[in-house]
Length: 161
Image (cartoon, one colour):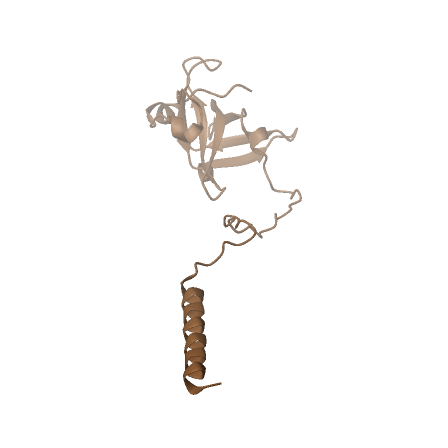
């Protein structure tokens, strides 16, 4: 092969490989064959903590509705509700005071530690508070707001049971 023809052949080969290289570098990547899935939030790995009844525990369902007495032994109201904090601990106990059979009753909240809990001879729960009827009449009234109670009215009335 004559020298000019070899030079032309080599030049053509170099030009062709340069074009192929340039095309390879500018060719956009092909989309993956399977669509990507959106990132899922990580699953909570915390397992539930199973519990068993213990001797000194108190069920809220048994506390709600019980009559509250003062230190003189007078019935001064009843437990209407138990308020839990975000941590699950009892923040307050809502007492219904005054009125008759729930009519004219107003609600006040006291810290759970304000109640002394005991049982009568029949095993019935007896909550006692160191307060007079007069003190409870002047205590700030407890009213649920609609956001806290989840009730649409937010009226602070007892839930239907």
